[in-house]
Image (cartoon, rainbow, N blue to C red):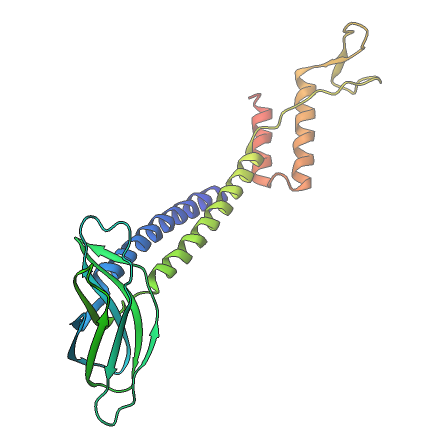
Length: 250
């Protein structure tokens, strides 16, 4: 595989990775918010009110859930609320931590994470809620869990960044190859001494410049190409291709 083909392949790979990671990021964000996030998996308790909810051991997300009138684009203010979780006999009290999250609204159904509870043991827990919620429609506290795929947007974001850097490097490499492969421009020298073999002199005004013959131009172009090859600016294949072009008079 030559360098030009490698550049094309790497460019295609980088572009595909960019598009795929962007689509994956958006898709996982939407799915995490509306499908995989089971905010009410264990049940809901009205505010104010009391009920029994069966909770598993481990982390439980407590979410304020209500209906909103209109688009709900202004967010969901969290009212002043409290919740008491009464554990089964012989089980320590759960550890409750306030953790206000971002609001999610779907068809006037709005919710926002308020607390995270660490449940010490699986069992039936008595839940009592209080709050100043007279301005809300059907307010409840929902008990559930977050999405198990919350890390995927981060993964896709990292892939997007790597693909973007790779694309920039590949395009810089392609520009360098194109610059090396461009025809060598010949600038005839202006000499103040007798011209070399292959040249004849013709006075031009008072400058005494020399006009090269076709053979002299080719010789100078071949010399220039040889110097570029020796300096590493041209590969051997590129040198041979340019040499053939000069000798063919193209």
